[in-house]
Length: 117
Length: 506
Image 1 (cartoon, chains in turn red, blue):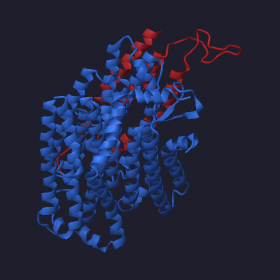
Image 2 (cartoon, chains in turn blue, red):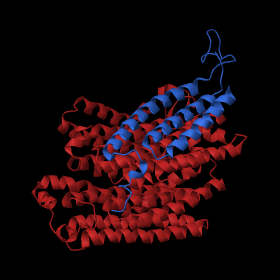
Image 3 (cartoon, helix red, strand yellow):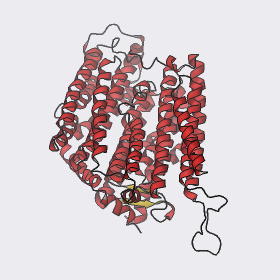
Image 4 (tube, chains in turn brown, purple):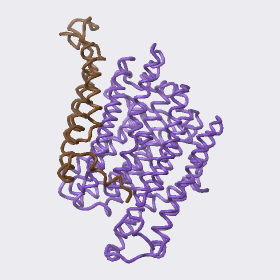
């Protein structure tokens, strides 16, 4: 499972960077989403995968008994997902507004701020 | 002061902006109230920053374990000398921008939550300066980014949206790289506390992977601080928002990237790693040169200044790449002087725009004859930026170059001196076109400007005058300022101080 997730993470990173480099605004958004998912899955995978194990110390025990799930990566991912959701929602609205104003979703038409005035 | 007082003091730079932002949201229709609260927030923030700074100066590094969690497990806030300086600078900026915003920001923008966003931005910046936890740093980055996204797009003009698209995309990519690097670091060491990381990273068997992670951090912070070749979002976006926002971004935001770079590469990764040092120096050289050449090609007040930020970040990164205690001190002095000077230059560009209605150098002119005081303000800042003695910029550039000479890195010093010359060239360009050349014709906007009441004019000038006074203080008391920078540089070069302070607590 770890290997499978590692491969999926790799594919998501590849696809994400490829899409971010595309000229279409919509594809850039998908690229950003893929990158976000890839980073989250990476942390998830690094935190060791344990199937059906609790992330806390059982009643009566002093320390956690193997196998237990590591709670910190899960907490990190949860935070990162929430933040990512908010940021991506903003990015979608911004890109839509930019698309409406410029009338094209080709990134090469976003040149007015780079031209020497 | 008791321990509790100090703990509260360290928290205040984060809590105050948050509380004021919430307070403003309660009165979101009452702009006058928001303006007053914003000025109050700026002033208290500045005062708190001064108190925090003097406390750190007297009592040394302060550590606060949030929620009482034992140290490597919970989140800690750490205020060492470097954090204290940066908090002081952000307090200073918050104070000056609060006044400057009143006159320069349109009512339409003010209605769209300009002031609460400004406070949230300051909260994010202060949090990033104070935190001692890697993941918490990511969270503060996002707080800062999301409010800066909105501030940048506020007003929704076409150029703003275009700039914001680039800014948002590149910064999100940077955040994702940062997040992945934090994840890998956690996987290797099992901790997120920076001081604990500093100890444990050295024990990692696979040092090659550590270098890979270090490079991921370099790319991520490199995007945020706009170094070569990752800077393209900055000149594309910084000249588009309301000028108060430009000034705040120019002064503070890129410096957060530089700050984290200093923090991570002095504390966590081995300070004597030649590979990292060389990579940083090469990047610094290219950053300085491309930035200043970009500025020389531009023909717009704010765009020239934006490109200069890139070039100046190169100097700060160069001081980091030299990797000695003295070079860190020089770099810190450079950061401080640059925040003040660059902000002031943006303030002045805003004043000029207010008078003439444009930033375009071709249509500007005649300012020296009509507004000698504004010209003087510009002249002082421009001299400072290009490193003319006796202004602060000279001492900053001099010490950075000296740090390079001391460890015989002649090539990079040569590049930095050459870039200083080109900086002078583009400042001369602004001076010649905007101030010195004859006025072409009096514009409609200028006649409007005559009608503005004298009080509002003073309100427009006062932040710039205040910043100029700070520049002059920094110039003529450069010795005492630099002494403190040397102490801070020592602290950065010997991470043991930081580690002991954090891990020794409780």
